[in-house]
Length: 122
Image (cartoon, rainbow, N blue to C red; front, side, top):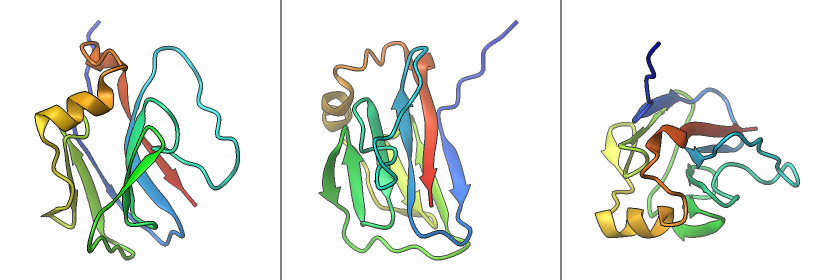
């Protein structure tokens, strides 16, 4: 048997109202959202690019991403476990190694096989 880890992925948007593309660090546990306004990035141990609110979410904390726009058919790509984020090929949220380390410091990301792509869509 072998294990294949997803380190980067891309999502092409359809007709959506809310779209969050991100990562979750989890080890054998389920994810429960408190209400329908929450998604990936709103919870601890998650990070996401929230295209509807033009923000980047880290463990429930948001940072504005200037000029972030999306439309039906646009492509969102996350590379290297969320260190780089692209919308239609344009780099919109690069992370320094220090910022990524600070975001994930309590996640035990040395075990990257516990990091998984996750999206929230409405």
